[in-house]
Length: 92
Image (cartoon, rainbow, N blue to C red; front, side):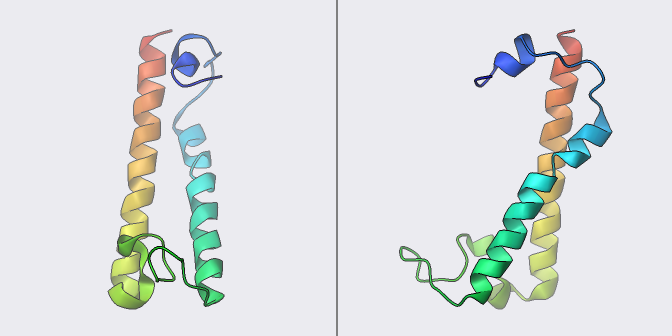
């Protein structure tokens, strides 16, 4: 389904907060990929950094701030998923 069609056409019965948690597997997999990519030591051409975003530069931020940023990003994705589920519930 394209874009907004999910809200109006797709079946949404039975979706809940647990599904939103499961959807976090995609950004988590992306973070793991970025960790592995950074360990390769190959710089990203345009940024000349190991990290594609400054909020994810573990060496510059330190582990504590880096973990905070990752946690806030995941929390943001979870919140967005809950908003989508709420919108879908209103359209039932």
